[in-house]
Structure formats: C-alpha cells, structure tokens
Length: 262
Image (tube, rainbow, N blue to C red; front, side):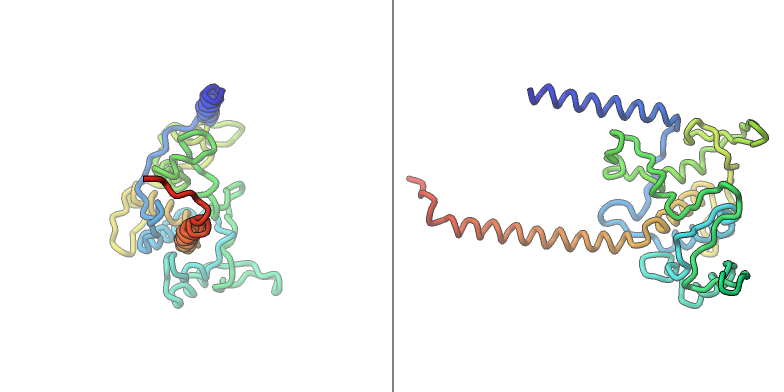
C-alpha cells in the first residue's frame, strides 16, 4: 500500500512539473554562479555597486525600486556606499513631496521613485517573483541545490533576446527564448559595452546581466546575510540542545533500563 502511494505521488509531481513548464512556454534558465548562493555565500560588494550603476544608467529609464530606501545603499552587506556617496547619489534623484506639493531632491530616508514607463513593473522584488525553477513544480529543489532562481532567470532573460519582432494592436513585441510564450513587450536592453564601469571591469553583455541581476537580488533580500547568520546561530543552539537532551534522557532512564547480560 505504501509503495503504491509513493509511486502515485512521484508520478503526480513529475507530471505536474512537466505540465507547468509546458504551460509556461519559457526556455532553459542558465545556472550562473552567483557569490551569494548557498548557505555560506555572501554578496559581492563590487558586483552590487556595478549592478547599481547598471540600474541607474539603463533600467531606471523605465523601472523603479519603490520598496528600497536610499539609506540601504550604505548599510553593511549591500553596495556599502560611503555615507557621503549615498547622500550624493540620493540627491541626484527627485521625489514628490506631498507636504510642499512639489518635487525635491531625495534624502536618505526617501525611497526610490516609481518607474516612468507605463506598465513597467517595479524591480524591488523581481528576483523573488521570477523564480525560474526547473524541478518538481513548487518545491524549489533546483534553487536549493543548483542555485537556479530569480537572479538566474533575470540574467538569462536579459541575454535571450533575438532580432525578431512582431506588432499586435499597435504594440511591438520582442522575441525572447526564456520569456513565457516567447514574446516580451520589453525591448532588448543589454548589448555589451552598455556602461563604463567605474571599477574598470569589462562590460560584456553577460557581465552586465549578472551584475544587475545580483543587485536586484539584493534589493529583494537586503538582509539575506543577516538571515543566514541568524540561521547558523539557531542551528547551533538546536544542535547543542539536542546533545544535552540526549545525555539527559540517558541519565534519567539509566536506573530503569535493564542491564544487558554478558
């Protein structure tokens, strides 16, 4: 009976995963090697700074980061801009202040403004929303073991455009191998040498895609490193308690357990 139930469950998971991928219509997501993946991974500060530059010079023309405050750019674990650099960067943006009913330069406590292009999604949680799983549907096993998740999806998506286009109801669509149904309303944004990196890194298309994907992962999970540290501490405490409970249990029940005869 148990064997039958196990086979049935595995079959359902396999069929569910296959049908979900077929319905999505997207292509294969490349497994990029991001430094923050895995239990011991951490954000690469230089990569996040490059990703911020890519977002500022390319993505911000259409998209926003409405849930991310400017002050987070100088906090540990992120791009870690200096306090002065963060304030200067914030001041380069304008936000609408309801108190004065006018626009003013942004302050560290302000949040990134919304995107300016109609219909362009906010990118704050994009790395969490675009899971890109390629395993049993909903279980996220590939993200756990291989790291295939939101950042991989974003980087692959940015690199998967072709020259093919079509027009429907006055709207242009662009062919993308990984996008569901393969037609995206967003035009190709990355071609290589799109930015002149401040740290001198060569701005190949793959490099730019990975950098901005890493930055968007940080914008979705700015406290990821702190969460990992808290998890390690919790696991350590639980392991210590398990050992203590084991020996306490043996000591409490030792008088009542019959001794083995030799």
